[in-house]
Length: 343
Ligand SMILES: [Zn+2]
Image (cartoon, rainbow, N blue to C red):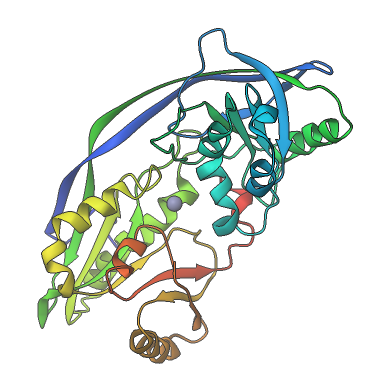
């Protein structure tokens, strides 16, 4: 039987401290006061600021795109809450609305911003995630609502109803110490060269983190553990890294990169699993043409999980390393039902 406690049979388990943002949501409510009363489900986007304790009561403006907002006069936006009822294409494309909504709306004078949850699937489900405040404009509270309510508010808006919302949000924000966890199976020939497998250990507060990214973290941790259990001795060191603080913006990976910046030439390949752990199909690969050719050859040995997709951004944490010229890949899997589990 395999001992599945961390580092089981592997003595090289270390941690590296990382200072991480620590944002804690409090009560969050949204009510429609006009044209009729309705409670609207919301979820704050981290690290949103709080509203004043009495909340923000303001008229709603609904747009579909940043371009549509840009085309409006500032007077038409000032003092309002802006809802982006953006169309979902893919997570990678649509997520810019979550990340940039607050700053785009604030630039036009809005007092708060809402987005339609970034998901292709909804059972009145709110989806959180991180967002970014630009430094040169005031910060405004920002949250996601469900696809269903976003559609409802848009319909009311295009029928020329005056929509008045009351938004209340509370949160606290400071920094705390966390850690990246590193598990090594030392290489038999080149112990100073690394093949890294990784996943992130943090998750949003409203879920358990089982899908994002408990599964990815587990399969990465198991790579050196199972190789060791099977007494297989890889040429290079297989290093599993469990990143901390991916969700607030790749904080753990950025810290690792900074700390190991003089050793990057020792990383021969870096992998990640952070897009679900369903039936594996192959790899989504980033790197030079030569690297992609080598990976394509290696993948032939893995039939039937031999699919290869070349991408500029194959992953989240590992993209920091791929941008430094290190070849990398993410697990490509049959994750079309990912958003039935993801929040
Ligand atoms: Zn993730």
